[in-house]
View (cartoon, rainbow, N blue to C red):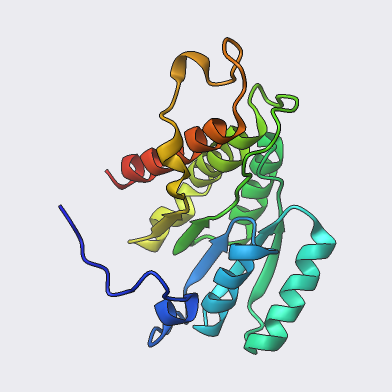
Length: 202
C-alpha cells in the first residue's frame, strides 16, 4: 500500500507542524540537544507541546532548553539525562521519566551514530547498533506504559537511506567473523530501525 504524503522533499519541520495545536500533548525527543533533535524540539514547542529533551550531556541540554524556551516562548521544555549508548543509563532515565510523566503522546527516536570506528563493544554491542537501534528499542519498551496511556500514541523512528547499505546479519552482528565495515554497520542499524517501526506498528 502506498500512502501519498502532502509534503515535498524540501519541507521543513515548520511546514509539518503548521496549523497544528499540540497543547496538552507530551513529547519525548531522544538526543535533542543538537542537529535534527533540537530542530524537531523547536517545531514541537512552537506548536505548544510539552517536550522532554533527552540529552547525554546535562549542561549542554540545559543550555539548549533555555534557548528554546526563549525563542519559542514555550516554557514547557524539560531535560532528561540519558546516554542512549548505555543500556543502564536508559533504564535509569526511563524510570525517572515514568516517575514524573504518566502519559506520553509522542516518542521521537532520533539519536544516531554514523559510520563510526568499530571501537570497544559495551553491553555486548558495538556503538552504532547500540545507539541507533538498541537504545531506541529499549527506551520505547520501557516507556510503553506511558505511551499506551496516551491512546493513541505515536512513535517516530528516524532512519535514513543508509538502510540500503546492509541487511541485518544475525549470524555476525558484531563483525567478529568478517572485517568491520563502518558504512555497512551503519546500514545494518538503520535497517533494524525500519524493521522495528514496522514491527511496533503491527
